[in-house]
Image: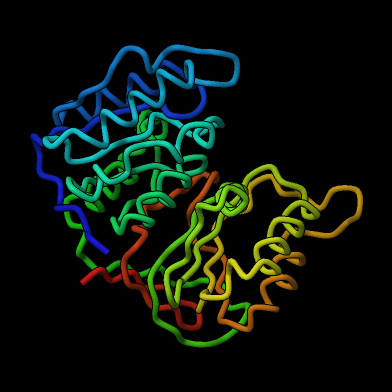
Length: 293
């Protein structure tokens, strides 16, 4: 797995909108903040809207291909997630990313970009989209920059809940559960050997979490997983059956017979800390350590 080089102030970063439309003011504020530290490149087409998409498939696919191919771009930053990336992602020129590695940054629907980056052996960053940076949380902004400018620094997440005890090392993979399920259905998901699977989700009923996890487990897609770390399951309430997301996740993940931690501060909650994917990590009771080396 190749880790793109660290960002430096003054580097060129490209903002793209490969999925759904977004709050224009938030993204413009995020771009303005980025412009104080980096050279920001974007096309005004990112503000197009076509129903639940940020413009046509042709517009979004062309933008993604252009960003992947730019040799002077140090990072590709998603304006927002939403829906739409699955319509274009498989036909993008991913060999260009391998030839000119650059950080891909985002979460939620952007999980599909992380999946494709992993397929060609390039590490990426699960972190706030540009819209999130537009909210102005200075501690989050500082940590976001640090994750890109010092990507080889070890990071510890402590105080996590231990659901299944054990200590294991492996390579980080994952993101949004729905997107991983979609990637598997499309034949695009490949878990690295001894994967440390990171998961988050939003607005899915517990029975749907059960359905997606069951499909991934039964198909063998998670056979190479050595440990699991759960992030936020935002708005995944009990629903009419009174069964919580935690109950479903505990039961389904126990069938993998690997260590499981919960409470990683990533996802659609208030806090979404940056976590690199495709790099080594260590999972032990109550603690998750990311150490790219």
